Length: 217
Image 1: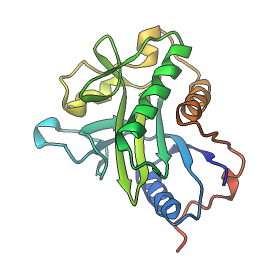
Image 2: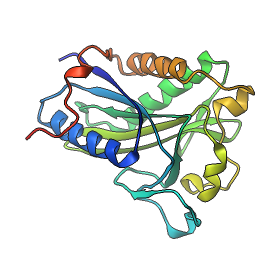
Image 3: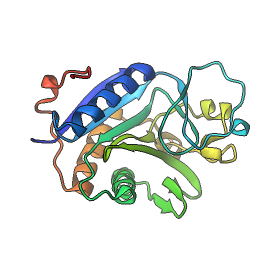
Image 4: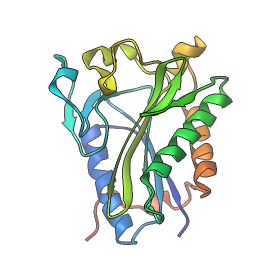
């Protein structure tokens, strides 16, 4: 089966969570191929398995406790979120995370941003500030959850939390680094191409319309 690129546009977090969990279960059963799901969320805070109460602050946006790795983070408009739903034939979760990091670093480079990784801190960094967060989950050796790349993100929402357990002021965006907003569709296209290159697998929108967005049992 040809791997599929699925663009969900802007979607409420709870609905996207339901979709990706269903797709991950179907991938484990061999009913669908590998997928890269790209989208934006409405304003939301998500709490990973490592979240502690000290990393939460009073807030007025929805909060979801989920099964991904990592700590608290924010999703919202202007941020590109990706959920790779991949069967890990080699059972190498670290390599999966590295593939994501490499794809996001290559994407940033296309726009003139030199990003790097930071040992013991998954994600993508620019001069000590975090440009992209990564938090994955794996069930039946199929990945879900994934990454959030700050493109034109309203960074003030990160003040509601200690993002990924870090001190405030350590998050950044492509817009902030470049001093101008970017075309999110251009960034989305670059991420899809660079993730395909990192994984060695071509993700095509062909066939996306045939993927029912509910779990089929």
